[in-house]
Image 1 (cartoon, one colour):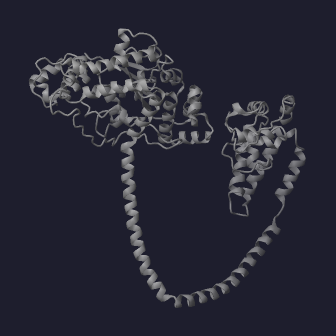
Image 2 (cartoon, one colour; image 1 turned 45 degrees about the horizontal axis):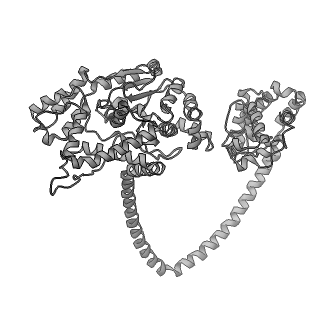
Image 3 (cartoon, rainbow, N blue to C red; image 1 turned 90 degrees about the horizontal axis):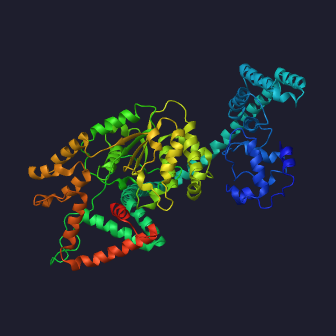
Length: 638
């Protein structure tokens, strides 16, 4: 094999830059010599696998056949690279197409090698074990692949001679060794007695010092215990502080990155976000009211994710963007029992479905459903489903990192490696040079990255598997306007059908944003505001609020929009005074806007000019032409 490759590549100059050592796994930077050798060597492998670039020496492949042995050994191999080593030889036979040795023969050979010699402290064998060893050696010699290279009859005769020999000289040598050990032990015993006597004399002279030292040691030990307890308390407090500030740190990092890229667009996003927050708070006093504060008192309390699916994985890489809090902190989920029953029937009891996609307009409460699915406690609706949810992702239109397909893939890897030890072992075997470890490389070839880290490892998992659910919220918000595509939706379209049937998705999205492909592979659930189940949930939600029956009757006119009702209930202190309740979300926002800026035009005029400037900037950067009404509405809805 080595000679054939050398002949085929004789015209290519030898390597002068030691590619595997200097460029590692970035084979695109390797010289022609090393690239072509790797390509041809790969054709002789029975299974495609990574090479250990820290171990192999690609520039020496052409110099000797011994230099290519490493290619056919496992990535994590730590044994001998000598071709006469049985373990090395078995891996070579197994992984290289040039050899045709029966799998059973290799397994038996490795078994006797490991159990009776390499990993055994015994120096003798029983008759049965001896017979087992020679049986496998005779079978190995009889392999057809051996007959062209060995004098089979001569080998059998020599093996037979070795088998029939009596190893009395070895046993005698062992007995002599034991006798010598006994003599040494007797001499050592005398030496130990002399040492013990001298040591006792030393102890007698240091009694007083020992007493003082013992008291000092006790005090020191008590102080050390107290110090360790304080350190542990500080560590726990610091850990809690880090957990509470994760969201702030991530948001700050994302904001400054975006600001550095395009400060004008960031200003626009910040202003819209600020307006949305202002409108969602309790009614503001007008700016022209004397003595009023410009901002209300906002109380920031602890956010508890107790019982929710943990996303704090550390293998094969640490979590760097937790997304659970982006689902919001909703009050207790009211109703929806019917929805979780239907979901259980679809994903837990139907093996043919790849998953379920909930389609609904803004205000239905899709994110609240996903959050409850991730956080349902024992005895609550959806708890049975919660036991099967092993991963989740959240798309946020205004947070670029959530829309990166590489982050989507790496989050799934982290979740699965935490949930399945078998999957984690497969990932670990791939090695640190794998494509998915480099986020930018993964991003540039996302489908190859997904196949390497998700499709192929999941296909290797054996045995009967319970359904594994992957929840994805707001899939439509992962749309990339610059590329005019939704890359995460593209991944699901091209790869979901290749995954094992026990891997299923639960997706939420807005109506009219999903491709036709999903209609054939997942169950589409169009959630309508007017559905009787939804209107019953709305009534139950309203009935639990502390407002008068008159206001309750008015809220029943919400037409099934949970967000509409929720916005009204946030202002329940003044809801009793409403003569005419807002008829839509747009009216709620308009009324809050008027309450904040007042009716005097001079207070609104400044904000209006700023808004117009921002709209022009967004138009120029996003659409590259004047916006139509639909585009303006799309921006405002976002």
